Image (tube, rainbow, N blue to C red):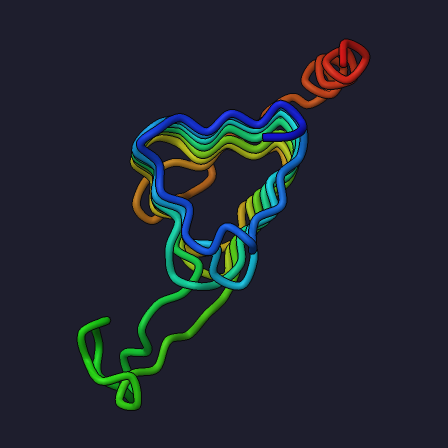
Length: 170
């Protein structure tokens, strides 16, 4: 892989032609990532073991982002109001609402968190372990719980300084 991209096996990338990778990316073992309408992964990104990205929408991952083990990012879902539900149903009787997830630079999705369709995780934001995110998370905040709610702010100056140093080293 170019740009120092490491993908550990076994990992499943569906529709590989829909993926764009930055530099210094690690995707750990047992991940399942569906390309959907497009997956863009920035520089210095780690997607830990057992992460699942599904739903058929788009995923945009900024620079210096961590998606921790066992997290689920759902970029689309079956419509519950006017169609049959489930992949085994006849295609003409189903309706999938495809959406997006955006993880801005310096964000972190902690272990076992779930991010629902149509959500943007702001720059530098952290989603706590096991949290369920159903709406946008403001920049440089930490959210926890189900549903995820504000806990506190996160300082940014030191993190930005460290990121600049990382770029100087490549």
